[in-house]
Length: 379
Image (spheres, rainbow, N blue to C red):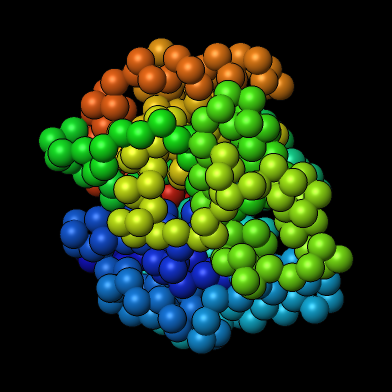
């Protein structure tokens, strides 16, 4: 039997995204490997997605990410409209074997509520599981909805109701990891530090900036501030977007264009070469990071990771070999780790990435979970 999977990436960004977009990058890495193994993929995303698939489902022409931090009564219809289209598609056809859902909150509630009237659902949890205690504390899979995490640490913090329908973690992957141990280095090593990711309080860019000034190392920040990808697009400090406020109040005072600079969002070879040339990728996390896309990308580029020992980092980084981790809040330890990172071998980082974080490995693990979902659902 041909396995047909509807992959719901949600309405927020195209697949692949034009820069930042952790979930969409994961979907873009997974789908080609599924199709290579004979799976038919129906992608539910926005029409701007150009990832090769067998069929597409969409409501919106372009990604709606910029809407996310508007007032709830202005944005609530975006997720609802997208899920309504997905459910309508499932109701009109009977060839979808399974839904692999990546849409926060709306995905498991709407798709899970279909019960036996719809195909079984595997919902991937990409976020902080403390965000929606009433939802995750009561979520009932009904024998048709199952979930997976993106790290064991993430699932350890899940409420009992969620753990009961969990099939375990699947670590994220990056195409950069393919043959990372065989190819030449993407760039010659320099002394700068790098932090790639959305500029938001949980990522700790203000700590990384302080660290750069303290250690005398250059730091490059690459990623969007809220929906804004370049400096000319930034609104003024009176803007109500919390990430914009964080930028102006805690990060921008340290950004001098020399010791600390912000590039905006980078993608493709420009981003990869920046990361590969760095002495270390820094992750002074202020939250329990569940997945760590930027962490596995750094390792695949041959760049050691320096950060706080929290969230998924201890699962992804081998302390003393592929990075150095210190206790959360220990900025003295973080500074010492930056100095010691120069002694770590970039080849060991690439070797670990090629072993653990390739799209092929992630796809194989998901195929095993698809089988488990179908078995448990009696399909």
